[in-house]
Length: 244
Length: 248
Ligand SMILES: Nc1ncnc2c1ncn2[C@@H]1O[C@H](COP(=O)(O)OP(=O)(O)OP(=O)(O)O)[C@@H](O)[C@H]1O
Ligand SMILES: [Mg+2]
Image (cartoon, rainbow over all chains, first blue to last red; front, side):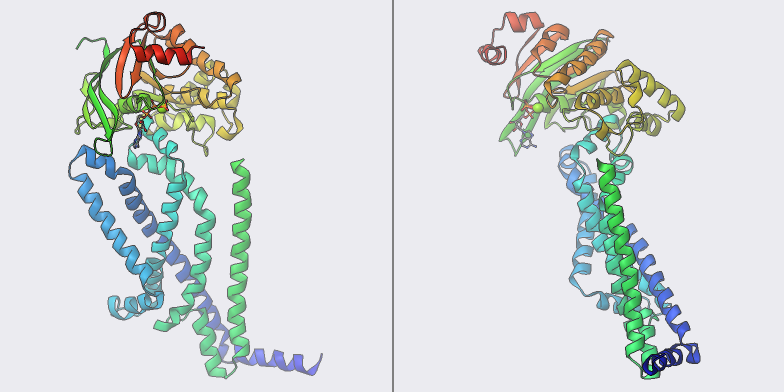
């Protein structure tokens, strides 16, 4: 074995096995996955609610206005709240939102992962909401009328007829959001959360070796993204087939 | 109101853009059980708007619609309950593409009427057999021809056991060779005594199965009567003009 390769392997052994530093990396990776998955769940829930309010406002405002009553005004207020949320979230950097969550909203808590899920979930919700809304709008309005004409009310039409079709349409986009989110969580270290990036950074700081830890981190993200991306394209192919 | 009247329309109005577009400009009529009403008229005369108002897919600007004695234009009426009794068939079928034919037909009875799934499927298969599609129960809409889709759309509505069926140009999106199979299903339905309101350009159908023809123009019913009177003895000049164009 050439000298330089043996040296390199020794270096890796020192970096990761000394002080069991590899455990940090595993902890960081686990936290990154937890934050990403948790944030996606939170984002999807927020996204569904916002998309439901916004598209039901768009779809029903005319008829509610005509029929009169309080319903129109309630929906209008909810719609305005959603609009405000979307504007604020999409108009400010995610790091700032994360810091506000950690140092202001949850100042009393030091559960960084939980705060991360909250902040990234809140952020992702704004984008997922727009994905869902576009998905709902992409479903033929005739589907909606068919549901209503059978006697389904607005909510049930959404639930049984529109949302299942919408999900199929947005699944690839949603997975892409998941990929973006995975990379975005790398700023979690700003508030001291031990995520993958932070773990690599700490190991680098302790060992004064930058090349190996940072490339390990980069490679880990890359592999995750490549796996997810291939999943998306396989899914897209399957969906296209079932449309025929 | 006599017991036989199913739908009573009083001075129905539908305006768009303030009062710019008067799609319906004061429509009144009564539809009795068992009637087959055929609505004809030039493009833009308000036929679709009228039909779609009957189950409130369009919310009228004014006037009243009584269905089985209930004013469904009243804000306190739960329209969803009444829509279950009013089947509708669309020009573009509007089948649910992500569901099989059977699922298309059973989802409403199961979810809305609490029907037993096996029972609903049995009924659906019987209806499919009646329109000659018993072997397509597990197909998806994309695997059907236009005529087959429309026949499925008709029996999907029938699964709710409606008291009236509304058709908006059910054959207009079909290739000519498929028009007949859909009209045959509609004729059979009419012969069984189903109350029907049909917007169509198929004058042959109007003459053969229509019990009454409404001629609409500019949001008004300008003339109505039996097919014989409308087609052989038209009075209104615009009806005469319309007929001279469609009856070649
Ligand atoms: N959403 C809308 N906004 C504005 N105007 C509308 C709207 N829907 C219908 N109209 C107008 O109302 C009038 C009646 O339309 P409707 O669709 O009922 O006609 P129709 O008799 O069904 O015509 P066609 O034979 O072409 O289907 C038309 O002038 C149409 O342009
Ligand atoms: Mg029309």
